Image (cartoon, rainbow, N blue to C red; front, side, top):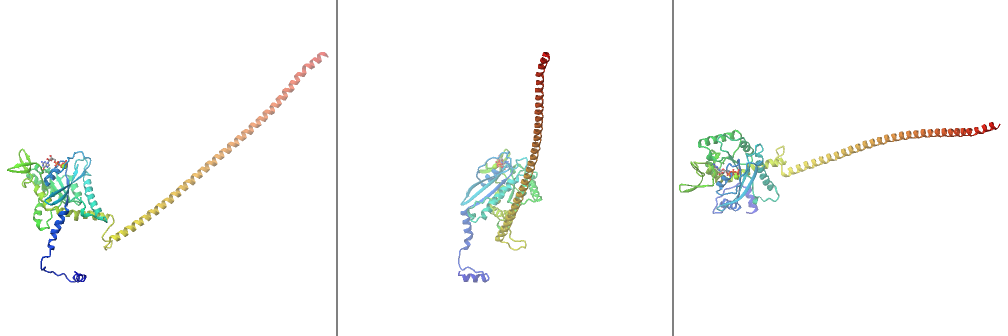
Length: 427
Ligand code: GTP
Ligand code: MG
């Protein structure tokens, strides 16, 4: 079509033309199918339920294979998520299946934080996808999507009611993942008890505002079966990899002294219903809901948290560029403010240190003056003492000289006396 034709076409009203012959765009759906088939699919299941509830057995039964399993101990100090990925093939369709086990769920004495690692795991997968989406060079085409498409929540077949741990966990997860609640080991509960248990569970979920996944009823092709199945929730399932001969057929079943529970017999349990709904009818819807509802919510909250928005406060459209500019300005302003704050802090610190040093100098000076005074005082005292001692010494010397003179005089006197006596005698 020439450019002028395109312009004319866009200016004119759309006209419906009947094709004169076969053109071929009716093969578009086939092209899509063939592209998807070559690309393969990924499907990620999260199994949440207490240790030994039958998670691994059910997965093996669902996919009719034996996945590697590792029994969990009851001594895990916290819940831990263990993902395992398998490449499956049915006819020419490749499926990258990831089964994530919440290991140690319900085994801790304090279960307040049991939901947290699960929520964090789901968020991490959303975050990884978002990071890939935000890259300049995206490779979403061959990106291994690990976002959880469905959470199978295994309910213990007590026949009573849901545990608070179940309610809290499901409530925390319901805005992040499609939850399908299932009653595990349904062969351990009687038919009438099971009926009452199902009603009780549903009413408890409703009264606690827990949103579980509803099979979609907007597509005519599956509306009927899906609405019937919605009424059967939660599915009561039995898992087994054991094969038992019933009549002349080998079926998967659990054998008891009193009889055989056939996994795929709809009058025995809802396993077939779960398999139909999960794998055959609604797998694509689960993938779609994950992308359009749960991931979208995560993405919106995350981008809003980062400051991105579609409209400004006056409800005017706000582009990414504008958000970037505003954020940049905010950031630079903040940086300047921080810089000024740091500078001020530095100046104050210098002033403080200066004042401290001055104070120290003054103190030292005072100390020096004091010591000088003491020294002078002591010097004066020593001088006085020295003078006193000198005086004393002089006085002593004078006395000594006087005594010596006196002594010599008296000596002279005594030496002259006998001479006179002799003279007297002669006379
Ligand atoms: P961890 O991974 O260790 O938490 O256990 P799990 O939840 O994977 O349970 P697993 O499938 O290993 O099964 C534990 C036990 O329960 C095994 O002895 C199974 O045979 C039994 N079991 C599994 N499914 C059912 C069931 O539907 N009914 C009954 N009665 N027993 C079951
Ligand atoms: Mg297991």
